[in-house]
Length: 255
Image (cartoon, rainbow, N blue to C red):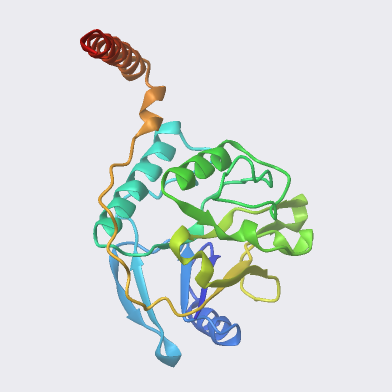
């Protein structure tokens, strides 16, 4: 199966071109970003493709990109994504996330533990660190970083007039399907009126029986950044250690 992600900057007038490129590069699924389409619904396209969209409510102002907006908008993005992931995991579903994260994660694989490898660009930014942290917590793989390409071929955003190049569009998935991913690469030859490049993954059959996941509780360590929560955590931890020490001493005295 071919799955891709592409920031098209606007859907208007591009429907035919998109289906043409999907056929050309053998894509079964394409996650498109920045359609600028309002409301929710689906549209039948050519060649049997169907466009499912979910945008802002009609009349609502379109927000800026994640980078450059106020910090609470970034937090809101990750909170909403976290809720979706938690909901999907309750149904024992494997997850693939296709989209423009506007994050530069760099190429230091030690930062990402098992979530990333070294095949990225050198630059890492604040959003990139946030993305890495999010992927580690949720056991997600940043697919772009696992397959090597020539550096110029890795970039997913290229603005020639500003000499700007970066990797910000990603194919991310749960670690349990890593062995089903044949490759993830950037397609420079895909043509569309956008400064973003198509990113494609070749995925082997994942329609297999999924073992029931063990119940788990995700520790929200990110909340410890809040001073009040951090203080309460440290206070409760200290009390717990003291209680444990008293129990241990009492047990030794009985012996």
